[in-house]
Amino acid sequence: MKELYIVRHAKSSWDFPHLSDHERPLSERGESAAPLMAEYVRKRIIIPQVFVSSDAVRAYTTAFEFMKIFGVPKNEILKKKELYHASKGDWFKVIYTIENRFDSAMLFGHNPGLTEFVNEISGVDIYNIPTCGIVGIHFEINSWKNINAEKGKLVHYYFPKGIKRQ
Image (cartoon, rainbow, N blue to C red; front, side, top):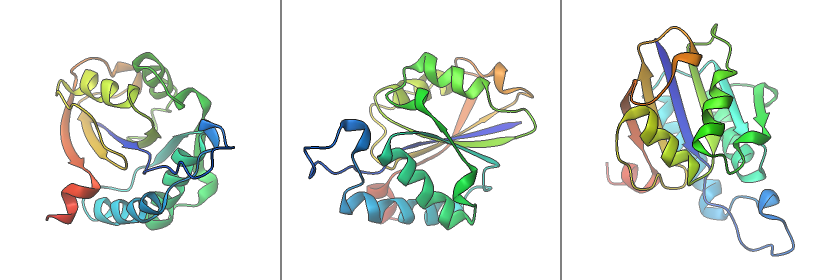
């Protein structure tokens, strides 16, 4: 079985108009949401064996916050420029590169491709995964290359506003 966790980056800041979209940092809300969500899911999932992030600052920073809470060294994040505003096809390509020795992976990226990808591989119809939203999908497969449309089962879906009510 393979477990895939998809995380949309935490809320980004628009306070620095001189920065490119790729360089935008997290906002104050994003800086507080990322560790909150990491702590919340740390108690509910097995810590993933591999972490892959878009190389955009807001996604990578979100990944780093999760890894701190999970107790995983920062240098173990695999940065993939292909996840920056990735299409569904780009998501598939990145996942197909994950080594099969890993049974669980957590990827950090951006909408709209992230939500489209999740809907494609799980058969659900989520309108929009919010910032710092986390989706967990389980697959009854042995190889990451066997992930394709509607093979997975959505087993986790958490987002900051949703956990505050619980």
